[in-house]
Length: 327
Length: 308
Image 1 (cartoon, one colour):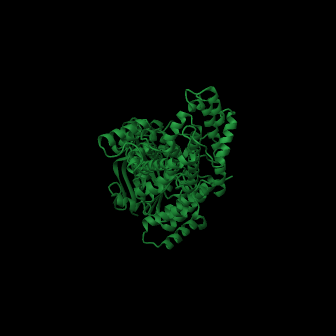
Image 2 (cartoon, helix red, strand yellow):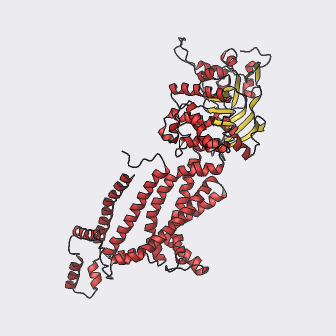
Image 3 (cartoon, helix red, strand yellow):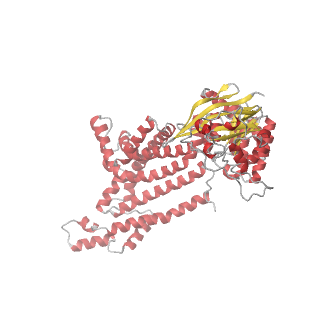
C-alpha cells in the first residue's frame, strides 16, 4: 500500500525566552492509506508537535521546523504555499484536538461551526445541502440535529468531543490526526468515542493517527503502532509484532511493564527509572540511555541506527544491530 | 431581559442617592461660607445671617439635602447662588456641548483604538507593535491638561490649522476631542492587543485554523468576537473617564460644556450647580454601564441576564 503521509527526519524546535526546546529530533513516520496508526509516548515526546507540523500550525514566532520533510501524497507540506495549506486543512487532513472543553468557539452555534468547514471546502454546495449534511454528521456522532442551534457551553464534555469529531469528519478527510481524543474524557465515554471514531473511519475510508499514551487503546483500535520518545520514533511495527513482546525497544518494554496485570502476583509495578531527557539539553547519543538497563558506551556516543528486526518492524536500538545477539 | 433592565434601573437609585449625598456632605463640611462670599466683604453679620437663612444654610445638612432632592425630583434644580440664573436652563445650553464632545472623543478612541489593537496583536513583537506601544504609553501617562496645551501650541499656534478655544464651529471640537479621547484610545489599543493575543493562543482558534480558515477570518470571526467582552467593559469604563476628563479638557479649551461650569462652581461653592452636574454625570455613567451590561448578552451567549 502506498504511503499517505511520510515524515522524514523531522527536526522541530520551540524558541522560548529561556532556551531552545528540541521537540522533534529526527522524527520519522509513515502512514499508509486507510491505516490506523497508534502513536504512543509520554508527555513531551513530541506527539502533538508532529500533528501540528503536519498541518503547519506550529505556534507562530515560537515553533520552527529546522530540517526534514513532510510529504502528504505528493505534496511537500513544508514547501507548499499558504493557499495550498488552506485547501489541505480541514478537507484532506483533519485534526481532533486533545481538549474538547476549549476546542470549540464559545460564541458560535455548534451547527455553524460544523457548517463552516463545508463553507470553506465545498463552496458550490447549496445551503440546503449543507444543512442536511450537518444534520447527517451530527446524527452519525450521536447528537440529535435539533441541538445544532445550541452553543458549546450547553454541551457536556463527551458531547463536545462528539461535535469536534463531527467537525473533523464532515469533509471526509483522507487523514485524521486524533491528538489524544479521549484523554479529557472519563473511561465509559472513552470507549464510546473510540468505537465511534473507528466506525466513522471505516465508513469514510480515512487513515488515522491516534495519538495516545494508553497502550490498551492502541491494542484495541490500531493496526500498527509507533512509539515516540524524546522527539523520535524508537520503535514501529504492526500491533502483532510490537505486542508480541518478543523483540522490543527497552523503552517499549518499560511501558509494557507499567501496565497492571490481573493475573500477576507482583506487589508493585515496575516503573521506568528516572525522567525523560530534558528537551532543552539533549544527550549526544541515545536519548533513553540514562534510563536504560542495557546501556553501553556506544549508546552514549552516538544516536543508534534504526534496525529492521522483522519485515516492517523497526527498532532504534543498538541491541538489535545486525550481527548482535539480540537481547 | 426587560425584568433585568428594570431591576438595574431601580438599582441605580440608591447609587445616585449615595453619590449626591456624599458630594453634598463634602461641600457642606468643606471650609468657606457661601453666604459670606455672596454678600461680600463689607457686609454685616446680620446680612450674612439673612443670606444664610435665605439659602437654607442655617438648617442641618441632611435637611438641606432632602429639600434639594425633593425639589430636583419635581424638576426644580434651583438657581445659581452667585449668578442667579436657573440651573436647568443653563444646563440645557451646556449639556449638548459636553455630550457631543464626549461622544466624539469616545468614537475616535474606539474606532481607532480597537483596530490598531488588533494590528498590534496580529503583528505582535514587530516594529508596528512597538510603535503603537510607545504611542499608547505617551498618551496614557501624559497629564490631560499638558497634552491639551501641547495640541494648542502645535496645531493652533504653530501650524494655525485649528482654533485653540471656544466651540462655535465643528473645527473647534477637533482638538478637545483629540485630547479628551487620547488616554481612552491608548487603553483601548492596549486592552484589545492583550485580550486578542490571549484569545489567538487559545485552542478553539487553533481549531479554526485547522479547519482551513484564512488568517483574516480566524482573527475577526473567531478570535475578536471572543475578546470583545473585556473590550466592551473597557468602553463602559471609558465613558466614566471621559465624563471626568471633560472637566479638565473643557477648562483648557474654554469649552462651554458642563465640565468647565462644574469646576467654577466647585471653586465658588455654588451648591445647586455642583449638585446638578453630579446628578447628570451619575445618571449618564449609570446608563452607560447598564447598556454595557446589556451588550454582554448580545456578544456572549453564555451570559444569561437576570438568571437566578
